[in-house]
Length: 404
Image (cartoon, rainbow, N blue to C red; front, top):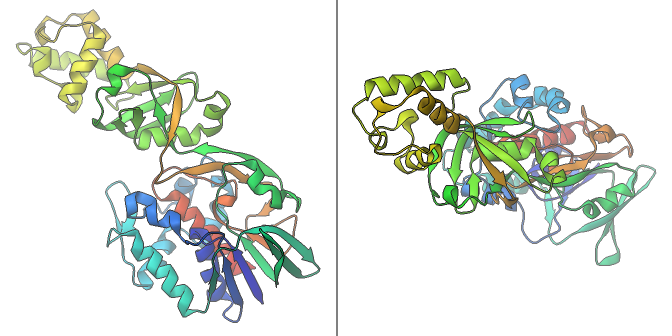
């Protein structure tokens, strides 16, 4: 059996290795359009590569995928996060689970993952052909013919093909798959930061708040996590999660929405007010500037007090009921206009791709073209930050390689 894997990224390499593991006699070729392979692996996680997530429950794991989570459940049963840890560990790349459940190589270097893939591919005889941009596929009986861009006469033939080309920001990038009869969910950006025009907030750049609640006003979209204030707006896991779950909503509105921030991380406003009343009682002799509740930084606390209209020189013991309500409101319902997005380069993914209706998610084989398989972000699957997108690549690549 001859197999072509189109795409030399995470899903492509994992699919190729899975083919050789389950079909040792197969001849496997990876076709990469550029001169470099595994580029996204190299830059992910700030160069450390967030390989997977520590979550072992398939049900909980599926919740981390705004698109494709339910469809992946059976595949996760075949190759899940625990299998990923075992796979890399057995091949000399031990992994470590951080406090936030993100999983990285013990070396804290993405190169460890890249070297592992390259060494494994070399050891089992996988050929990697670079600068091979596929522009068309043709099927004749049981044979697939691959045609390359820039050279209409250059073709190769294979028994099976696995498409692992990754996400594409433009619908036109899927034209060659549309010509085969596949439906494409329109690609739009996912996992990006928010641009906020409020100069007061942006003056606080560099401040990190470990646990906030974020929400998009007038929607049910909410997220919890760390928030980072930047010179252009806000970033951090809570923002990236909102951008992921709300990718299409945000795109359809031209990224012109309002962001609500609860700086305390406490969902119950009555609890927030009660904590402030307790603070007023326990620190009655201190100035508002002298005591900061909810472990807020000094600069952020002073900024938020300014939004209440209260004086920093006022004493806690002088606060009345209305003052407490003002403070609780600003802390729990602080709203800002969002006027755009900025790419989060290390983790950037797209929402959209080959419709899962066209894929048998048990085998990753196309329902439209027998003998054609898919893996990774080329599918309409994407997850939030935390190693979930790589896990989807490993899982779909493994299943496609095993069951072709």
